[in-house]
Image (tube, rainbow, N blue to C red; front, side, top):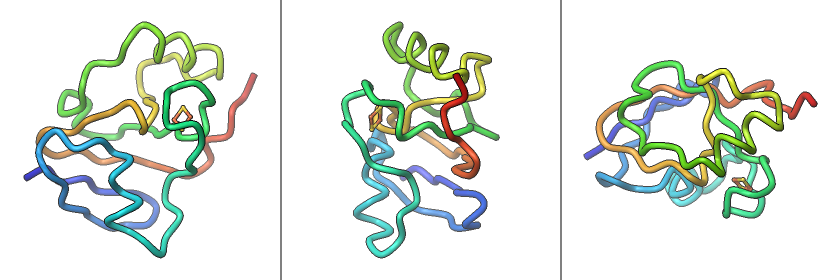
Length: 101
Ligand code: FES
């Protein structure tokens, strides 16, 4: 079982091991926690800041890192939620993450 703590919502969600973070939409049905976009790592709508447990997320691909850098989130603290799978426990921030070109 993986645990994802989401700020500023201050909610902890239990996910299956290796679950994609996009599963949050099923766990938190009535809350729009992470904006949904292409779900394919191409639009950048789902940027999250990883506050703890970065190593519990699947490794980013070169393509994901390129898009994060393009969007101004290339300093290693950010991920595209639609491209992450979680194993273990992590804390993310979902607020104030508009692309800043
Ligand atoms: S939803 Fe488009 S990059 Fe994640």
